[in-house]
Image (tube, rainbow over all chains, first blue to last red; front, side):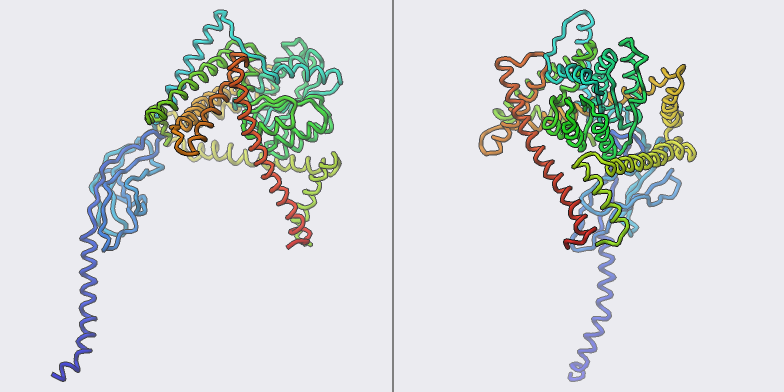
Length: 393
Length: 214
């Protein structure tokens, strides 16, 4: 009996050495057996994309918290059912139960499986599937419908204008000041500076600026006033030269046109600003026009022009920059007034029709907004909000 | 005081730019021309590397256009390059008119892409954010009402088909006041950001260059 008691520590140690590894092995087996099976529910071409992507959706497994949860899933791919499935992606374990595999070759057939990382457990085979681009983004149907309605409205008003219908546009103070500014520069024998902003030639604000440039250049051609157009982008310079050249031709003074006055400076924001500031102080233009897209340089330009004593007319659709122009310029065309100015000056039925369509659109938006707010407030319904849902993903 | 020539160069150029606050002078002129020259050279390299090499020459040489099925891939690669080359016809008096085609394409694409984007981001999203229930149960509802009134009267101000007279003119006046309040806050916010930029430059001069402050 005493011998037995003496041997107890040895028995205890032996039991630890023998039993624990057995438990560990058994536990490992239990982890393996407890990991739930994986099932791919769907594999498909990623919807509403430009192609080269496949989406895999699997049934989210529920893990027993007492066992080790795998670090992630491995996604396996094969070109055919007879090929080996190679691991192509690793997805960390989380809340996700789907994954978009990118950089897929469009039109090529693939098969997919999914497995737990560092285990042999893998899912059923899913496929065949091919990636392809989509022509229509179903999540943007609302945008599509609104665009179509707007275009139809513009076309309708354009037809009305072409049939001789009168389109009234209210006077905008900044526009009427353009002619006065040019007259002042002519009387003083000083040049006019036209800055078309930092936007690309295809920006709507820059396009509107070109229409105003066309009007200004016609008057400068008639008055023989020098016009300087420093450009930020090379393609803007090309368009500006074309616009001014055409205006001088229209005015019957192609001999006065000098394309060296419409020049490219640089495509870096602050060096461009420094150069334009230098022009304002050295050439001392009597009238400055800042029309187009402007960013952080707006106040620097407007302030320098103010210091140089020029009459200044600015216009931009960059809402954040408008306050600086309002503070430092004589007249400011705010946001849509810039587009309205181009339509107002050109009297082109196409532009007037677009402006009218925008006005009709605004009236529609006001009515829709009032109805939406009333319905949401009185009936607690979000019907109108859901009606406008746009899913860009 | 710093012994780093880079810091000395940056400090001197900073002072040259600041000298413009007094009046136009040769130092400012020098830095103005330097920055224009450096940025023009920098952009030339960027355009050659990113536009010409990465988006045209590399895909052409490496055959990346084959990733798009059919002949569309090679067309998408060659056509824009061809239109770009057409811009150079401006150097010829005889063929200069051809340059108008790529310009027209540029405008068409730009406007076409911006209309749905503007509708989506500036109109549809704004409408959704404005159409919230106003029940006057909290101060938030007062804010929502203010936003709704601001949006409606702001739209009235930008309505060009009717003169701003009578009740319509009154609504437009409310709209422009709300716009001006917004502009005022933007102005103040940006001025503060500019002042912080100035502080940064002054700290650079005092600390990194002169070592006056720690």
